[in-house]
Length: 440
Figure 1: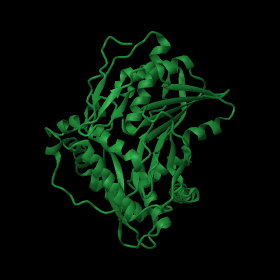
Figure 2: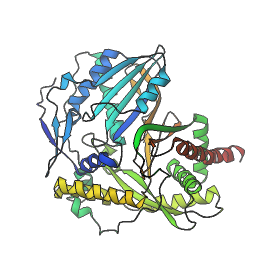
Figure 3: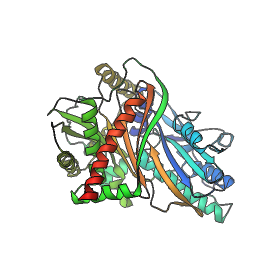
Figure 4: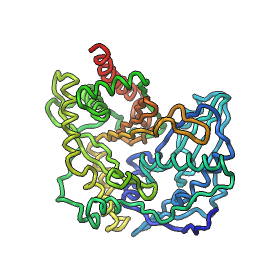
């Protein structure tokens, strides 16, 4: 494949540990992206591009191997005997897409799975990456990698990409960019751990049997109106959706008024790196928390103002760094102890019946037009991972000025009717923003 010798083993990062352990009983670790093209890809070349990507970023060809002290990424012995990209020809695009969204591909130990759903009119590229390997920004980088390789193959069928076998996959480059020699030096005291204050409704003692996805979308016109409303009120789309999420939760869960309710938000740590680019596709995220109380009779604009203040307070420092440092310092412990600690924390959440919801801004899938060779992506979005109750992940992404909201969940532990009703509340709040802007 390449003149560079690919190692059989790679080190793991602290965030890899945490996300892998979370896959046992906290979250469903697959991250999914859906890209629909304005025509057909070359089936042979896209399959080849996916296969080459596994050498370009060689950890993709590995599995996570647990060890009492230090786990590792170990390459599969028979890479070419595995199915990395599958073409499914169908006359029922929606049914095939639903099957993809509501299932997880096997084998689970494989970090990447690609499916091309082919109809007479177009192809839809469905990508699954494991969260133990990378975060949502890593998924974007992977899509760019496959696009680049595919484009080169269109020009030269013998093209082989460079192998990135030495790029760091932890947060050490981030700490150095901020002037910290290591993770420990980035820690600024230890904030007391806060207890979860609420949870999305779920059925206790119920199984996580069938994966489902709730989705809502804003059209280009609606998204434009939303952005205009945000500009008028000096709020970002993230601020607006945080206010929407809080108001929907206030209405749906009905917590006590005037008591702060906590929401966790993800932070992309690549913001601290030159060109916001990591050395490898990896997990490079931190988390911060926002706390807003339900105010009886509060209008939307007042909730928005508080959401903006909460996010601005986070932005004053170096968001995500404290959490990232804690994740990296996990490697100072034995893996078996980290596993026991994290799973013990999960058991306490379940016993308490509450977990802080995760508000996850996946951002822009790619700049429009996003192309694979001469084929343009007409539509694209991410699908959030499913959190096991009492957790919940609310994710959103955009492409070509279309906004997509998703909640993945498992029935019967979480009722489909509840998720659909909650998303309807979100859309009602969003409609208020756009309608007020239209008539103002």
